[in-house]
Length: 379
Image: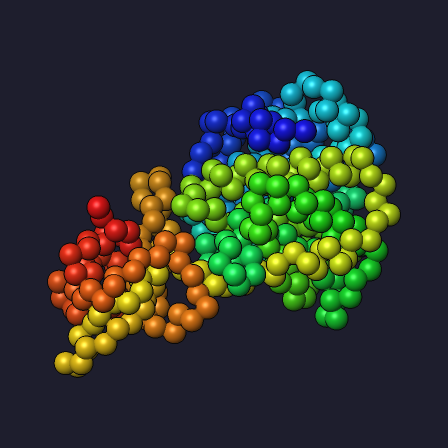
């Protein structure tokens, strides 16, 4: 299967970028027979889409965190593929039934926040079920009785796949079901699918697939569903070189979705891929958006050479997410990488007010004659 061609053909062009709200996706939802299964804190509808007639049931939900829309875009690309009226799509719809909640947290999506309108992280509400959105997901889980769950998220640019300087463009996790992080048949099923998706993704983004930390927290939805004996897979859409709109990453999430389903379609899950799962590089916090090296500063009348870093802060401005770089770390950058690295070669720092970088100050400055605006070098 030509996955790149497949995505090019079925990409949903009407949604783009980091800011994905209910207003953006509602017309896409209403192309299909949709059901409103609940409301958000602020009364926004929470939609369910269901496709297929097969015996294997897969529950998928996206934008549990409102500011994580990459997987939502990929989900609609996948929906387009399912409705492509091809031999492959017919086979999948005959074998599977998909239940999808494309946007669990419409209030957070509108506000571009991780939390819902009450300031609650829905992914820490699996036990209390204190929020209407959490109740909707749990009721859907109990009613649909899935064979597999796909928990779709974004992750920040700070993560690497291991500590060798490779960005974690896509990461996965088969969550733990107990404090000991034991591995049972349920987790193995999730691991097998992850290994299959990783094997495919390595053809496109070698060394850029990560394995998320599996520390157990029963308040997390994935851990709870795994505890309830349903194989659950966490998807994390991460960073690809300069792809801050996450359009390239979106493609790889789509490829992961299709290749994972193909694996399930073609294989009876009796494999044990634990070793290959554990070989996937652990996600590690090793990146800043910008790292500046060999910078001369004047501090207390002393001149010295330092390194420092800047990180983008995501800000919603007039319906668009902008990226505003701020100084994030001064020195102590051993074993850290920059998505962009600038060697000042001993040139002097000057921001017009200070001769040394100050934490949380906007990253607009000079390195000698090199002009840096919003973190990046102006040429």
